[in-house]
Amino acid sequence: MYVHKDYSMITYTFNTITYEIIVTDEWDCNEQRMNQIKSDFEYCESIGDWTTINNRMTNGIKWGWLVPINDSTPLEPAKEKGSFW
Image (cartoon, rainbow, N blue to C red; front, side):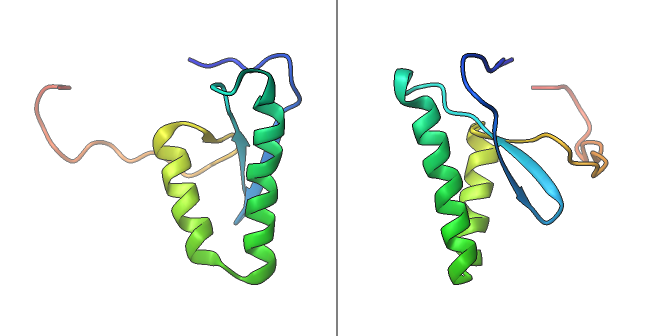
């Protein structure tokens, strides 16, 4: 589990869900990169580019650099039966 430290938490809110933007692979430029990602989201909002926002959010959640921190949506159980792997 990743625990952020040594920088301010950068968040982005979309459709009532707040996400934390987490960059851990750019060493001393992490906070700068996180602010750029937030700025990119805000720019896409300003021009109504909802497709890009959706694509970036989907990939950000998939790859772990965008983490919902107040999502109250209940998790659904797995539909497949069997072992974990």
